[in-house]
Length: 86
Image (tube, rainbow, N blue to C red; front, side):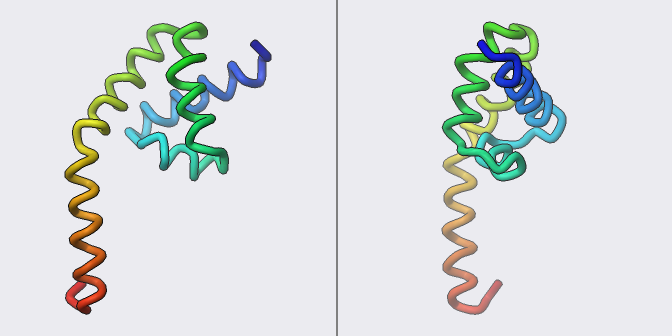
């Protein structure tokens, strides 16, 4: 694996852990695709640093368990904004 890819994966992981962000938010900050961030975290990071991967995995699982709530709130806010209540 190329060194810059390893550095990028570690940088993504540190950002996610420090800021407790989602893959989508991380991708926006680094101006890179979500699929690249996901591949770096899920496939490459375990080969680079297992402990760091376990820390990121915990946050990603937490995000996954909350996504249905976030989606519902986003939809609610969308319709409230359309009505002018927000």
